Length: 215
Image (cartoon, rainbow, N blue to C red):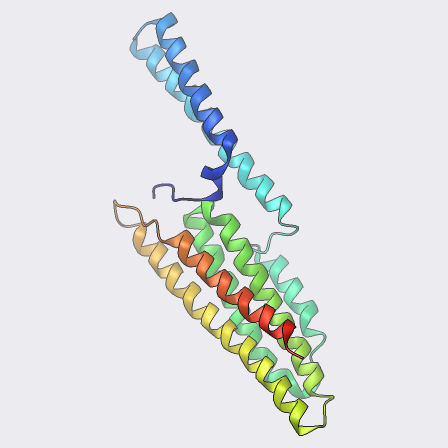
């Protein structure tokens, strides 16, 4: 699968590296001459330099994210911590939320396996999934304590908005996973994935912000 638009390509260092590598390769060809062995050796060195930079960039991106939410165990541990806030009588609702979040992480991990350069977008999506799950956990805890009908209705509306958004995220990531799998069988690349992921993240952030701004 070809490289898609990513934060990787927005880094100035990437273009400096590519320019320097091309210049070094050209100079090497001038000095060594257009011999098959020289061409092969020069190409190998250039490819190794670019590959090393890409691998290092992905590692740094993962470290700066704070935690690797594309790792199933890491994500499960964070989700389990959120679940500790949920009262016993709300466990049925939480199990559904937990299923949406867990499967969403699995979809994201599979997308990452096929296209590692989408790591930044996928990590951001997983952070919003955890944030939405946290809002649900808090909403269930608060709803368990509220007795006034008017405030119960308000809390329920916020809870429903977070649940609906989690369900939509689950569905959209499943579609993106299928789209990525199909793209791996085709010769042409699909450049819409980063934008679709960003649209998903933006929609999640809107719900998160709206719930926070609600009285």
